[in-house]
Amino acid sequence: MSLSISLLQKLISTHTQTQTHPAMEKLHKEGKARAIGISHYCRRQLDDVLEIATVKPAVNQVEFHVGMGSAGVNATDDRAYLESKGVTFQSFSPLCGPCCMGDTTGKCTFNKDLITGDMVTSIGAKYNKTGAQVSLKWQVQQGIPVIPKTNNKQHLEQNIALFGWELSKEDMDTLTSATSPPVSGGGDGLTSGDCAMP
Image 1 (tube, rainbow, N blue to C red):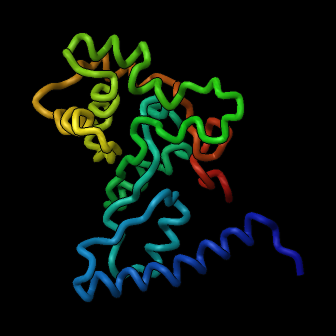
Image 2 (cartoon, rainbow, N blue to C red):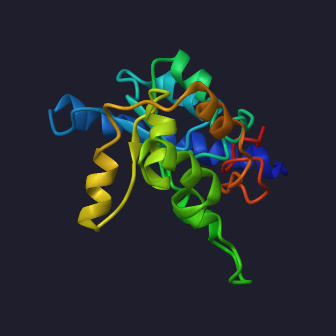
Image 3 (cartoon, rainbow, N blue to C red):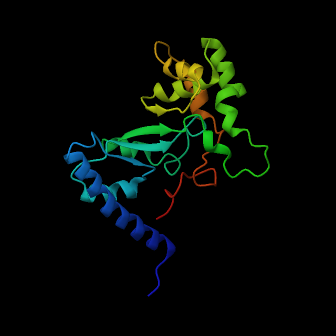
């Protein structure tokens, strides 16, 4: 008997979820975890978990950043669907840190575009904010929790200073319609990981 690659991957994914999620639920029920989270789960993966879950995942951590605002459901791990199921969509790598992974030319700048790029720094100048703050605020203003990473005290302070000011609708629209940096997870600029798999 032969199995297609996509069916085999689905079987492995489902098996892993049917093993892992109950173990996480056990930790939750024992009071060792306040909530259960998942990462980069797409609609079909979430549905697989919801079929067996007695404790629904509270959050799905997904790579999301400026450049992906108008990307399709396969790029955003179907954000609207996750939210419709009561699962919080949370952004990791909100400044596109891994966007140059796999670059062998040394010319990729996507990992800096949301920190020092022209678009975000010019918008930031209007508010006396950094490009990174603009990139993060774009998500926070949409109600998306972000997880920026830094070990620099000044950057940490800037990351925290995202409240008490708002981006204008025009600036939000500009950031939402940006197509760069592109989606990086699936390697094709269109998909995030395996969301396009049947």
